[in-house]
Length: 108
Length: 122
Picture 1 (spheres, one colour):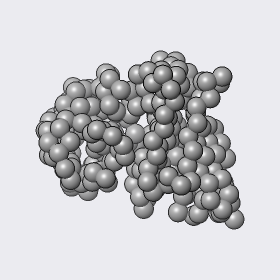
Picture 2 (picture 1 turned 60 degrees about the vertical axis):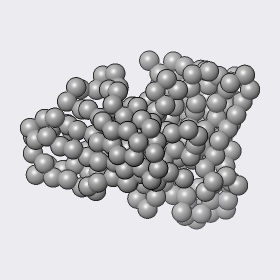
Picture 3 (picture 1 turned 180 degrees about the vertical axis):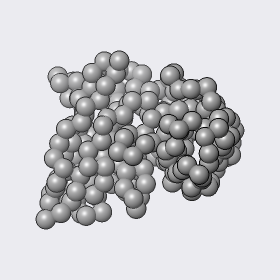
Picture 4 (picture 1 turned 135 degrees about the vertical axis):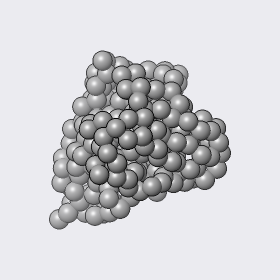
């Protein structure tokens, strides 16, 4: 199985800050990398697919980049509603699909 | 607008079978552009993909190796829904279970059910 490793596991930041979360795959996954946001008690919500494509309805302050094994999610200017947990997920080739362990973004 | 509505019990006894259903509105379980997945989440295992069913002239399914001997995911075209059955459950199967649509144009889970907390306990 392809292992996904996120860093950091948690992050404290302030409203207006620029934040970057990293995801690394255990083997090359081309651009088959997705990012999700999850708030407490809710299902994950798709933000970015195919490494850099913004899902419909997602604010443009979210962006993704990378290919191969290294990927980043960037939030250009944090808003109060962005404090949540973020997950990466690979969809390369065939299942099993795997997720990172999550990055909890907290208010400083 | 696509919506997934989950139903099923929140408490299952050890060794019994966990059964959940995911009703689809706004799309079809027989869609050639989607696959229908079950994913669970627990503090110890994080987000764990369990399996999927999809239709491409025939019905297919894929399962995670960790549950392959115990899991069945079935479509129900008459009710436009799909189900999860996980047999011989143990407390380690305690988790929030989600159904999700895998939209093949994006290769991502774009629509999720509301989640069902399932506790395995006697």
